[in-house]
View (cartoon, rainbow, N blue to C red):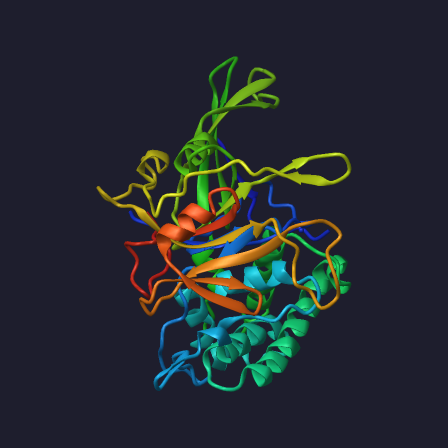
Length: 403
């Protein structure tokens, strides 16, 4: 009996109960091998979809002077928006989804003393500065200039990994999210020798799947483990059904080491669960030289139950489920870009659950509107692109559950 380990959640440049959060992203050049993992409630809709983010960072004391985005008698919700610096709705929606995960931001802020001393922590610094710029008071124009400067630095960080980010071309939000996570992991690796222990915030999105590969000729089973930071699901009428399809046994052409058979049946189960589960909906098909977006509707549950796909190795408590907290969607309207229209139609926005308990926020670049869960779930049925579910059994500062 052998065990094989495959790095699935890594980015290759070129690229219980869970509460969902949704986030949005676009297409890109990242090799995820179809399975990385993370869940919180941001939802993504590509440039033909819209992205929505679940929870905003809750108030707490940090060295960055974190504060509520609401002043005395004044709602500063509009400060939460991010300006478009040239066809960057894909990047804005990706950032909003991650910034909408309170525990993710908290991991960055509370370790500022550790990462701020490293010159390689450029993206970590950008996340901290963006978080502050979105929540602190000030005029809209002053904040716009501050955010634009930070966003330009973020784009430069991503262009180091993918040269496509050097120009003003439209990119995929999904790839952008993966690039952001990859860069944060890289910066975390550089902090391994720090005097103070460092916990990478990306860890909250990571999990393991156990694989069972059974030879159809002799019945020999090969066990393996795969690392993920999200799952890419086929589009169906229901998200739960799409998830079930992912874990159904599938045929695989491979050579058996025992009998030289050529076919095997592969089954997967969760070995560990992430604190935040990210689900990517495959809304693009190969067209004539250009990917074509599929607008078929999908039913998105506010809470997601996982026991059926957890297996005996990752038991889920009775009644455990995941709640949706954010989404990234694709809107079929042209983007408002200072550099003109896009090469192809489509626009990313994010729907985010406000952690202050004031409902949902629709974040469309610099424009921010208040909405509600029923409207979000109904409006994004045909555009939902990336969903984030947060484990309801984990406390605010808890790490992902392991069994």
